[in-house]
Image 1 (tube, rainbow, N blue to C red):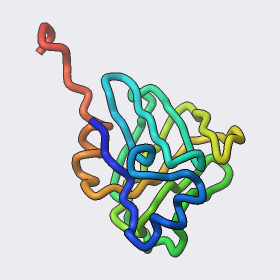
Image 2 (tube, rainbow, N blue to C red; image 1 turned 90 degrees about the vertical axis):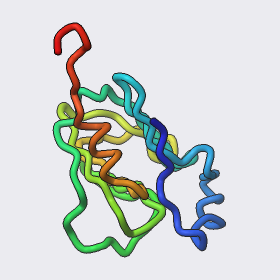
Image 3 (cartoon, helix red, strand yellow; image 1 turned 45 degrees about the vertical axis):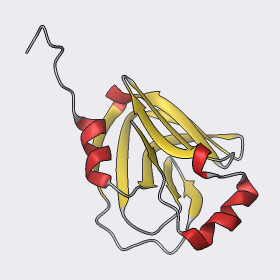
Image 4 (cartoon, one colour; image 1 turned 60 degrees about the vertical axis):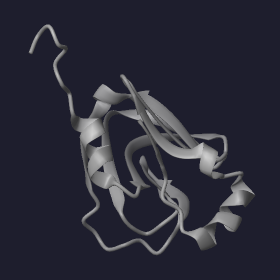
Length: 130
């Protein structure tokens, strides 16, 4: 399931500076892998079973938009809301402008946070075990 990262229309020209387009700005959950990209500004992929928690952002809406973070906590957003918080364990790797970064929490903007949360946390049993 591929879901675009929500981006305000007025932000799109600015995000083009980081080569962020509709085709390469997304969260993709397929089988056992999660991939997140925002142009060449941010990229990561990690096993889905390393998602310890996925939830709605409950804090105040952030003022900043783009790719920002530090110390393992990164926000990748093209809009201030709605946001999904993804906690990972163990720490994974991401890339910001090509540089490697640690990633233990990822916050992304998506139009349908409930669907993303369900995709990340639903660990259904194989048909022969249910």
